[in-house]
Structure formats: structure tokens, C-alpha cells
Length: 261
Image (tube, rainbow, N blue to C red; front, side, top):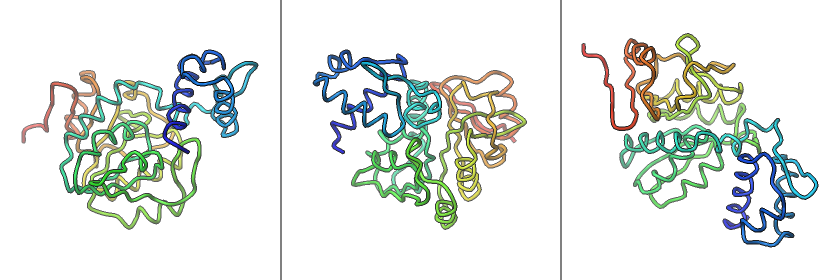
């Protein structure tokens, strides 16, 4: 698939998730292509289960709420702020693990200019975006999930178990002071748990909507977390809690550090 086709498909999906429904005529006008081209794109996306065809257009499939594309449309500005802050912590020559989520995906634009990086990923989309002379990508194998564009399962788990000495950057679906770091699906939770356990450092990426909003499957407690990066200062309750856990908090313009010993 050419980059032009992929970019057009992504533009279609952005419109679908932002508006709920799109028409062939309007998409053709917005994308400066023929209505026949739009119909082909919509048919292909519908075949992949990413949207639902309607008379004269397409609409959101609500059962796909946790797909990669759906997630990528949410809190975009917050994710970019967090991604930029995360990449400011990374130096040339490091070994990293990036999870398969959309916040880590936003990091790719900032990482391509680095040199000598080795990056472990389970996301095919993230692997593609990291293509750069200075970045070596290690893609986990396993069962491929088309909606999330990642790999999971025993094979992915076995390959990840071979790696040590990396810094893990993990964006979670929710967190709580009691529940810790959580994910909406068990397969992702298993991979992220292992990545956190084997990492030399765990950096947590969480926009403000994730605080006090835990999901079903636990990834970890706060013990391995060195830093939480978010787009704005957390509530006083969370600032106090993370201080008790010896976790740094990074957000734009201000930083809090480990408690003094």
C-alpha cells in the first residue's frame, strides 16, 4: 500500500471518528479525489472491519472503540505533549521498549532524528514509523491483531523474555492508587507486565483522563515506575501519592522530583 493511499485512508478514518458518519460526496471534495476512489477506500476499510458502510457513505462501528485508529483520535494534543516530553529523556545510543499504544506511537516523530537507538516494539505501525538510518527496530512476533496493528500471545511473550537492559515506555489505559497500572485487554496487559518486569527503568505515559479511571486488567503496581509523564499537573492527591512512591512527575514547564532523603 503506497503512502498516499495510507494517508488517505487515515484521513477517512479521522473524519469517521470525529463526525460519526461521512458521505462519499463530502469525502471526495475534502480529499480532492473522485467519488469512485472514495468508494474503493470505504469498501476496503469496511472489509477490514474498521467502519460500516451506509447508503452514500460510512459510519463508526462502535465495537471497534479500542482499535488503534479509534484510540489515535482521542486526546491527540495531550498525547503529543507527553510524547515530546518522553523523547527529551532519551539520548542517542539507548535501548528502548515502546508499547503498542497511540501515545508511544506519537513518540516516533521525535525519535527518528536520534542516532544509535535500538527499539523493541510489538506494533507494526510503530515499527514502520520508526524507519530511519539511526534507529534499529526489533519487532516482536506472535499473533497479529489487525484492529490494533500489534502482536501478542506466547511467541511475542517468549521473544520479549530474551531482552534486558532497556528503558520501557508504557502508555496505560487507566490507573488508580489502589489498582496501579491497568489495561483494557488481557493480551496487552501480559506483554506490558513482562516489559515492565524486565526493564531497567519504567516510564509511564498517562494523559489526565487516565487518572482515577482504572481498567480491568492490572499491569503492575507503582514499584517499578521511575517517572510519570502527563500533559498537565495532576491533582494534589496524585502529587502526594506519587511522592510517597518515589515517582517523578513530568508535565509541561514544571517538574517535580524525588522526595529529598
